[in-house]
Length: 366
Image 1 (cartoon, one colour):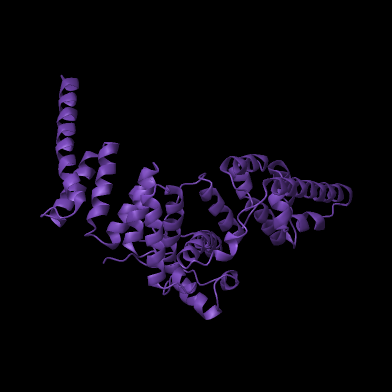
Image 2 (image 1 turned 30 degrees about the vertical axis):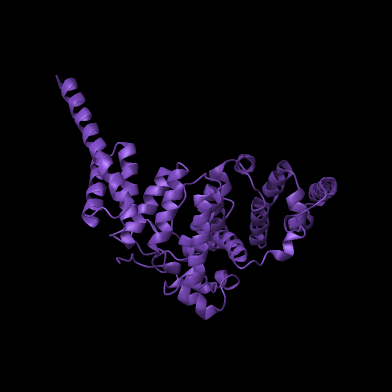
C-alpha cells in the first residue's frame, strides 16, 4: 500500500495554512462526522431504546411549544438589542448567542442581526465575540438560510475577515458544509503541513490528554484512535452505512463515509464507497478525488479504477478513461470482478466515441 505523507491526524493537505486555522477546521470535521457516526453506533448496539418511547409526540403540544419558544427567543433578542443600542452593552447579546435553546427558536433574520452585532466587535474580548457569532452560525440548518446570513454580513470575503485563527478554521468548515466552498477530503496531494505542533491548547478541550494530542498532531495517530474507536467498530459503521446506500439513503450514507475518511484517512475502502455515493449524487469532482485517493492507497483497487474511468468517459476525457479501463483489465484479466465486464463494454463505446471525434476533426480540417 502506497501511503501519502502524513501530517495532523494522518491527514495531508494541498497547502500550508496556519496551524491554528487548520486545527479549527479539522476539529469541526471530526465533530461533524463523529456525531453521525455515533448515531450509527447506537443503532448498531440498540442503544436508542430509551428514546423510542419519546418519539410519539402530540402534534398540537409540539406546535404550541414551538410557538412559545419562538416568542421567548424574540423577546430575549429584542431586550438584548435594546440594551446594546442604549448602553452599548454586549453581555445580553453574548448570553443569547450562547443559549442553544433560544437560538434554535430564533428566526433566521434575527440570527443574522445577532451575528453582525457580535462579529464586528474588537478589543480584548474579541475571541468571545467570534465564538458567540460562530455558535449562532452553527445553529443554521439550511443552505439558503446560511446564504442569507452571509449576505447580511457583507458577503463571503467580508464575513471571513471577522474571524481569525481557530475560529476562521471553523468558519471555513461551515462554508464547505453549506457547499459555498467545494468538499475537501483528508488529502488531495502528497504534501505535508509543515510545523503544526503549535496551539496545542486549542485541541486539548476536544481531544483527550495533552500527550495524546501531540501524537495526533504529529501524524502518529488518527482521529478514530483519539476517540477510542477500534477498526472493528469502524467496520460495523461502514457496513451499516453501506446498507443505507443500497436502500437509496444516499445523503445519510455520504455523511457517514465523510466522517469515516476523516476518522481513518488511510482506508481505501472508505474512499471507494464515498466516491460511489458522491458519483450517484452528481458530485463528479468529489467522486474523482475519492477514487484517486483510494488508488493512491491501494493501486490494485479495481472498483475505484473502473468507476473513475467511467466518470472520465462521461466527461469526455477519453485518454484518461482508456488508461483506467486498461488498468482494470490488467488487474483482473480473468474478469472476476463485475466492474471488469462493465469496462470491456465501455472500451467498445470509448473506441466508437474516439472514431467519431476523429472523423469530426478531419471534416473540420477539410
